Image (cartoon, rainbow, N blue to C red; front, side, top):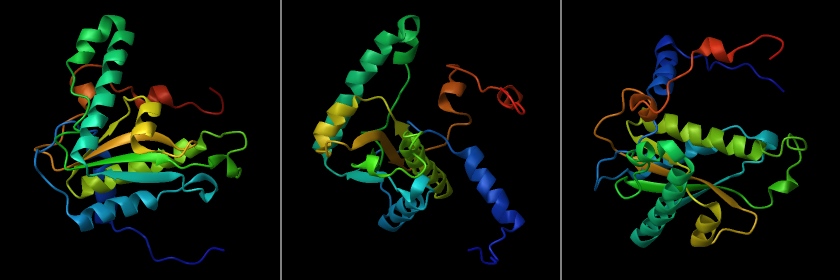
Length: 216
């Protein structure tokens, strides 16, 4: 049932939303020995939990890593996969290995995002598209990114890891799945462009190449 709402954004509020979108960056460089205030972290996680989800399944779970030992093990898992990814890139191996791909040791906070167990119980919206659990959790991560940027914090999504190794390290339930290691915290400066675009790994496609009408 729809109700009337007086939640129309002011021009300044609209501008702020777009500013967060266009100035969000996938960060790799953080201020070492920094921190995030508890209230601020809670606001960012609350923004994540406010994300839409297919069938209202809310598949996201967040594991805050506060142990130095666990951080070190996380980084080792990432480093193992970084080497395997480099080998798979063949001619671009040397170029890839030059890039900094994570800030696990330097960021103020490390949060692992997982898909919860027993997701198969949720059929609404997923009968033919079971991957919508991942899509829903990605919406939560994007909310975190935008909230972090609004708080003048950087965030980076690390996806270079073997999920089984991370599941074992964090004692995940059998049907749960880790999808992201998020590095969060203060940064010296935000990149002018997406880092891989800035470094020449690839270029942003023109929007006109990505839009069609009625058919592919």
